[in-house]
Amino acid sequence: MSRSITRHQVKMILSLQKRKVREENSLFIIEGDKLVREYIVAGNRVMLLAGKPEWIDGEQEAVIRGADEVVTVSYEELRRISSLRTPHNVLAVATMHKRQFSDGLLRDRLTPVLECVQDPGNLGTIIRIAAWFGIENIICSPDSVDFYNPKVIQATMGAFMHVSVWYRPLEGLLSTAAADGIPVYGTVTDGQSVYDSPLGSEGIILFGNESKGISEGLLRYVSDRITIPGPAQPVAGLESLNVSMAAAIVCSEFARRGNRQQTV
Amino acid sequence: MSRSITRHQVKMILSLQKRKVREENSLFIIEGDKLVREYIVAGNRVMLLAGKPEWIDGEQEAVIRGADEVVTVSYEELRRISSLRTPHNVLAVATMHKRQFSDGLLRDRLTPVLECVQDPGNLGTIIRIAAWFGIENIICSPDSVDFYNPKVIQATMGAFMHVSVWYRPLEGLLSTAAADGIPVYGTVTDGQSVYDSPLGSEGIILFGNESKGISEGLLRYVSDRITIPGPAQPVAGLESLNVSMAAAIVCSEFARRGNRQQTV
Image (cartoon, each protein chain N blue to C red):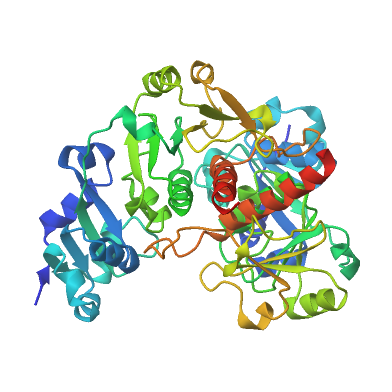
């Protein structure tokens, strides 16, 4: 029998809605039976599982044993601690995996770099896209939305386990990459068509902020300006694609070229 | 001087959150200064503009004159009638444009067909993608989310003006198309790579429900099963791409082929 969640635990979980608290404690939240199960089955331990009693009773032993502590919650308690509109049976508190970044991570692979992306749904979607195409790392400017924001984790639909997201000042990163001869592809509205551009299997793919695009300061490090061709004439309401759509299309086009290289 | 919004108007606007009421009255809601302005500037009249006094005073004459009636709202009133978390200055009540569907609309062009897509954000995103690539029509099964849902209109970011969305029983539509020799491309998890598939400039591109994919009943009308290649081995949390991501990538690949035809 598991005991009920304590007031202290409720308070701790609620405090993890804040980025600062998450970072100070190296803790974050995973919600929903599917995500929590996948996370533990993939070999990760969690600090705390807070589940509905019937979920805990029905769940496979291996998942329950993946937690240091298991507590029961009523539906009302789950609603209170959840950041979802419709909470799904269980919430887990997990420990961040901290690793050391090195510039070598940029070698021999493609790495999306996001400047000041603000919307949790966009970051989550881009992580899912990256994972789909076998991309291992994403680098964000420090002022981008936090990877461990519960809405980001949720929007990845599980893909957050397969991609490492790093926060780095981009000016230094891009100037080092440029000096090392690593191509910096920049998605802009007036570049060469991505369909006709030479695309390699190594490089940074830089995406700008949702409304402002890539800043002037970073544009100067861009070696290849690429664009997804849209309307031939400017059309009101169709100035650009959403950043996560652009990432889907651009990553797909890089993958297609790689694909051709393998199959031809 | 505009007069203040009436209680009756508040009630009418709130009632338009319901699909049934929207359809009975052929009315829908557009929110935010950018969207409302673009809609009117594009030549559409609206029945009612409910704006903050300072917005009405500052807005260009042509926009204000595009409304049959203009009323002022306080920020609190706007919050009450808005479906946005952060309402933007103005809300408009507009009239649906009703037109007659004909099977001829499927000829000589690409038409995404959505089976039971539920999420307003997904439909809005797919509309935006379609508009970007010059696609004129989208057809949805009758049980799909409503085009005139305020969250759909919002998610299109203005693209809703450039794409016609139709609701049709899909069984009849697809069997007619198949009989007429119109290709039916179906996005599935075990088809031919979209990068290697022959893709024409005429056809239906069928996308399935967010969790269930394309139903068995409709799969039999699919002439070309296409897949976006993902992980070589099945990976937990990466079973498929979100439907709007898939639409972005597939529509981009169709556009790329068309693009090549034009430029080569």
